[in-house]
Structure formats: structure tokens, C-alpha cells
Image (cartoon, rainbow, N blue to C red):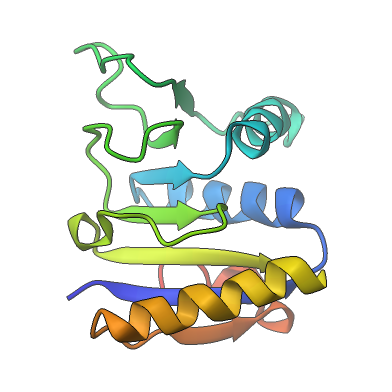
Length: 151
């Protein structure tokens, strides 16, 4: 069964997600990230400059693009189309709704910022996961990304 963790009260969603993805990559956890196009574009840019001495390897896959054999080993995928066929065990959701194929992943991480709209959306997604028979857990910001992708 898919594990769902909500990382809540995150003051800087972009920086937090970069740290989360760096940790997942270091642990060898192949990760897909979904969200709106603007959020993915900002994340893509941030991952290029996040660490001065360490690159966080990732690839943005836009709608209609296919994964070629050379890129299949990419550890982090930023997916404009959540239906894209990538080999990942963790899904990070930066978007406003529950992704449609969460059962494909061992773990789903919802990153929820401090602002009221994002928190409200997080509560709605929590209820949607519960309605699917899943039991989400809350990992408030104080726990940091160390509570992250690995559980």
C-alpha cells in the first residue's frame, strides 16, 4: 500500500523541495515530482543552482515527450504530465490536487506551505487520500527534510 506523508507548515516550499529531492537522490530513491507548470519551472531552475558544489540530477519531462533509453536512469523527474511513464518509487506533489495514479508509487509526499490557500488545499487532499482508504501522516516543518522521502 502507498504511504502518504504530508510535510506541512513549510515556509519556503521551493527550497524545502530542493532539500527533499537532494536527500531522496542521495538515498537512491528515484523520484517523480508533479505540480503546475510554473512551479515545475521554478523547481527546475532552482535545482540547477541549489548546491554550488553538488548537482542534483533531474530532468523535466513535458507533455508529449517520451523518455529515451539514455535518460531512463535519471533519478528525479519533473513531470508536466503525471501520467508519464517513469521509473520512480516516490512521488512528490506540489500541485493543488491529488495525483491520479498514486498507487504506482511506494510513497507520496505532499509539500504544504504556510499560506492559508496552500494549507486549505492540503486539508482537502488529506481528506481525498483518506477517502481512497489511505492513512496519511503529518510531518510538520520542524521535523525538517530528514523525515522526508525515506519516511
